[in-house]
Length: 194
Image 1 (tube, helix red, strand yellow):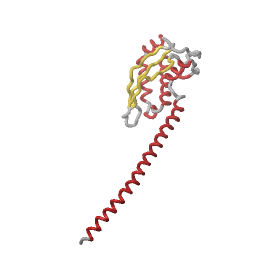
Image 2 (cartoon, rainbow, N blue to C red):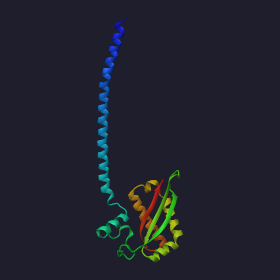
Image 3 (tube, rainbow, N blue to C red):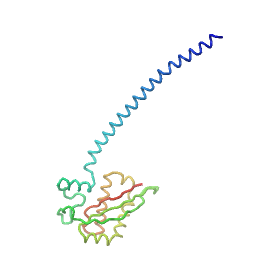
Image 4 (cartoon, helix red, strand yellow):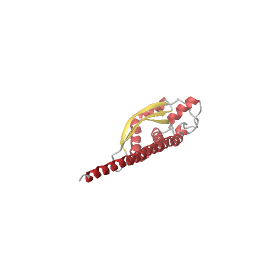
């Protein structure tokens, strides 16, 4: 009876001796996996920044372009974002008047109607008379903007290009309301899409 108990502890020692070898292999595999994921993740991050940084630079909104132009003394190309008056001559920088539109809250054109848009704007018009006319027709302006915004879906507003297109559509709508080319630029001062 003494031989049987002696063999059982030896078998347990052998199993205990094998367990550290397996756990060392597992530990090495886990460490290599973590390092590999870190390298791939870091490379992907820097690749994304590099590629998206090049693509986003030309598509910046006109507020960024205006700051860059003031800093470098360069002139913007004529015709961008509605910066020419009706007679076709380029307008000097800083001539327009700003009119703030209070935040607009609309339901987006979604099947379930659960998404909404909150948007506040500053409208740059060509002079003080145009600013007064815009304020005088604020009910028409809000009506036109609410109809335009409520026709949009979440996908219509998701990308930077679509937001720039929205700004151009707003300029067109405001031009229809005011009757002439009085709106120079539209600046989005607040946007929430949920």
